[in-house]
Length: 372
Image (tube, rainbow, N blue to C red; front, side, top):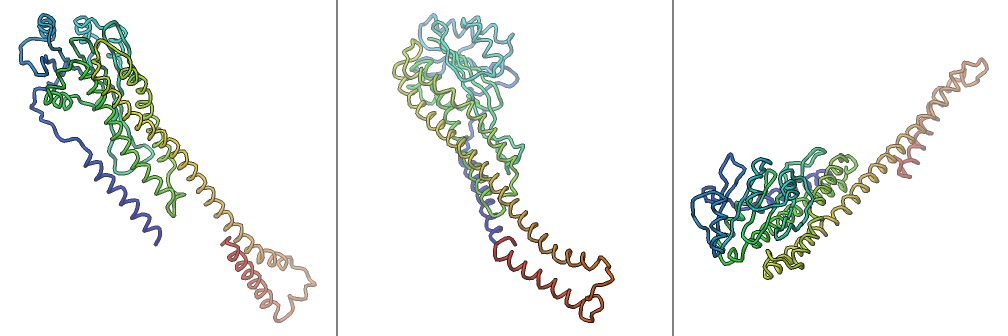
């Protein structure tokens, strides 16, 4: 009965978890919006903004940069998705980007960091996405990671995205809906990217919390010793991947919030402090998860050990009970000539009775001590 109750608790928790995740999904965006990326190209979009408003002007990135620099107003936002070295070489020359930063942006697989090359900032963010799954198994993928690189100058922003998630289309649409905010310059885009990335961290952390709650409930259920330890270890590995994405970002955000820069407006630095606070919350939760998953794994191993000890006690108790008839039958199986009981009329009944009584007494003793 208690096993059925625990099963209902676990499956109910999984159902509630899926409903919560569905509720947290972002609203659909308009795919026909001009901020959405054209298919089949590494260049997602190239847009000029002036006074927070999008300018619909013909031409490529070079034309857009030329117009902005001739007028001395506005900035260009160029977005790319997984460009090759050849595709990025012309852009790097146009914006005078440092070769080391260009190499990092093309190759990806970088740690979160912030670097300064002259008057250009180069920021790397690790994006994370929670992978939906019906049931956590020893091979389930829980966290999928990607990267967003951001080059920020006085009159341009270049964003380079790697991975299957972390689209900046909705972010661009949100900024365009708030011209006063976008009018503050390229650093607004950098802040918006950092804010979206950290918000995704918090969403993923909440989803991982539900997986951990489910595993914890199963481990401490009546038959918790039967839980596959591979599930716990897989969750720990995915948690480690999340930790590698989140924790290193603390120092770059602190630098953006405290260190003055020509390309980061002083008013925007206050917003970076807010993002850093949110990141600290995610970091603390991940640290707590790391300790909790270790405790869950140790508790599971302890429960397995206890279950094995209980099985050994039961085996030992039954072996002791079986030893009584084995010993008696062994004595009478030696076929000695002078064994008075062999010729006694009631000898067989007496031996069977003694064996049964001895086994019954041993059984009651083991039951009383909790071995059976």
